[in-house]
Image 1 (spheres, helix red, strand yellow):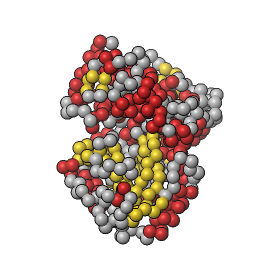
Image 2 (cartoon, one colour):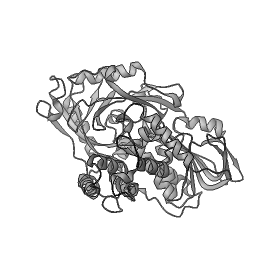
Image 3 (cartoon, helix red, strand yellow):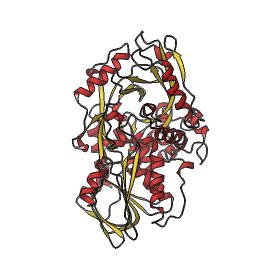
Image 4 (tube, one colour):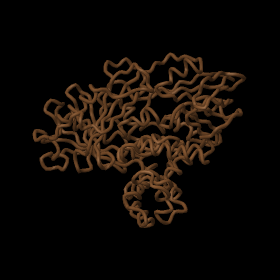
Length: 513
């Protein structure tokens, strides 16, 4: 993290290091603007690492007639897959048909529309399947004999945020983590903001414009820090997930529907596990202290057990996580029906320094949101370039050339095999993990290493000093939690006590530096 006691100036100050803030910082920096991004905790520390980790159009949003949102997300789905094929990939979803659900012909009609709302080059279309013979039918109870399969995508959500921040930084942005924006006021055509880090040191920023991408804290930031309360209100929706040991061996995911209409996904996760989620519950508490409760765990276990032959109980849960989604209040009766679309609110006219606030949104549409946000500010700022992110790879995504291409998605496995041959002195599974996390940046990670001994201490199984140093130097990792739960999910795989060992190692490294 950068540390400065003197005042800084920039065209754009972005408050919030989740997916929207990082995406806006990246887009703006690529257009030639000077950008500062500040985040009070770690990048993706809250909502943006607590998603169901899907790049999807949102099949269930068709029920609420949100055709524009679904189409926008479906268009973005393949744009994103091409831009970062190392951290995103296509996934087929199986929907078992329950006699209590809508008739099969109606579901087929919905899937027909889902397939055709946007052009598809990478993802196969939907089809009906016989669960008595299809591989995805084996783990299910025998009464589920018919189903449907369709395509969407999977994403490592926290790494997506980090890659956007890396790209922003490489285009000149300054990224401050663990640096809260305490106050911001308009003065002489600029915003004067005070940032403060955990050591109490303040950084003063003079910015031509301000973006409030604080997620669940968007309204609070407007009220307390910027003194600009908004007429728009956010509805905070808590979403929780559980992780259990692997429930099935095939590569398909499932979408299950509860009799009350709510949807739960069951997804292959981290090779050895299955991810089950999410819940949709109105939330009134502290967004920084959200946690799953026993009722949610019971709900997810009950719904999964309704479909799977193997019963899942709370004792099977090896990990859980929760996040608060800040959705635009639209007076929907149920939490699951609240719109996932976003709203951008611009405050400031004439010579007044603009303030743009982001309300709502979903991971799949983050790039489009960022593009629209910078477009709204462009006339007030010294923008040198036009919109550019649609045709750009994220860091590490340039597997077969600098331009996004379908080959990087369809031939990802062949790229992995080539890298395994190049680094034959490393275990193949470790190389696979590196390529999935870093893409072509694996070469920077392993620079100067030609044998295992060059990787330094093996701090935990499969976690070498070379990788930790890289994450501290290049990806703003400052704690073991940053590395074990956001830069990776090694926390699921390493022995108990690893977090304390890694924190001590990192602290010693900082002291030595």
